[in-house]
Length: 507
Image 1 (cartoon, rainbow, N blue to C red):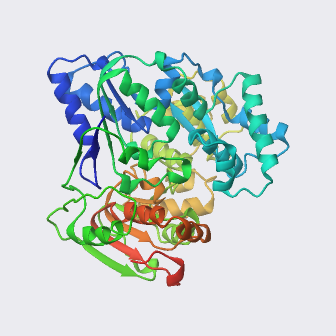
Image 2: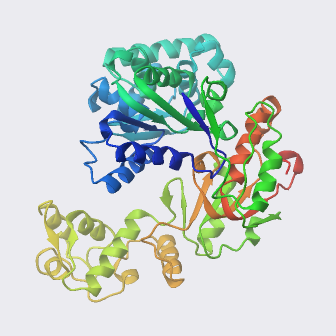
């Protein structure tokens, strides 16, 4: 394997994609190339770039531009019905007599499947045991579970029995099955693997099978940005791979002032591949504040980052009350249903011929009261008899589907929008903010923002009690997380310092 070590913003992904372009331009069939990324979005972005440059079919010509889990799903011949879903996860929790769905569950969608991954510590420990190939004892100690070990082992065995009885596979099972069936992996001429520092030992087994069944393999990553060791990622495996390597040394993201701070932090990591990288020529800026409320979120994009989600709650509340539009946990701060209702009403009002779909019309009616000159009683029932393919103008809704509201503004017509959402939407619109576009401000954990960037970054340097304990045991991991947070900034970095210096990162 040939490795690319890519410090922040040095173009790891671009380097791989340029090689894909070169191979395609020389006549190699795209189905002889494998490009594997950690997210479906990243894999499809790589595919779409090649599609646009070479006028190829995204479905037929790029069979192996996908995630490793999607590869397993495809070559093992799995179906969506075989994948562990929310209902099955709840069913196992009930059978086990333990609340194994507490902590929420993450729906992971990929090509052909939707799998539920529980964030419950016990379920995460079960996953860790398999991904690290170290068994239940290691996972139990690593997660510091609040139950006896024998109980954890029992739950582990019952979970495996439950899946076997139901004929179901979870996210990790796909990797287990693929690692045990290397003959199912297609022969490819060239394979590319991005973000390799995040692979677990189990995933590395698959990666080596891919290498064995290809002429050449290129992997890209950065051990300094390896922040998923808690989930089983094996940074050392990436660093110690045999074969050639190259350090991408020029950052196209990080300005000089941010680079100086980041370089001082990365130097604290003891177990790392030493590398030198250069910032952009722009100076940028680094400021410190003890009060996030003093930060003015002006022009440009903002990333607001913290080690834990709860640290962002107070700021999110203030931003809502002051009329800022932002994204958090993957969703805009104004509810999608409210935004869609406002959009539908405004378009119907402003353009007599504008049409909305049945789902848009239903959502519109859901935000309007029956009677009082808005909707005839039974109007929603009228819509329920419409065809899914039907389209509705304002005139059609009035003539045939019980709409009575005169030419009111949205905030009058949509009277079932709760007062809090109505006031917030009005504040945003009055400030000239387009609520139908992606927000320019994003609140996220540092882990959630990995791979992202913004002109401006506000970074909370506070640490949770759990993170402080972890830092004592594994300071390298804590420094990597801070390093990732710092290096999201393209221009300006604002450090929100902790009130108690003993409960935060030292910068």
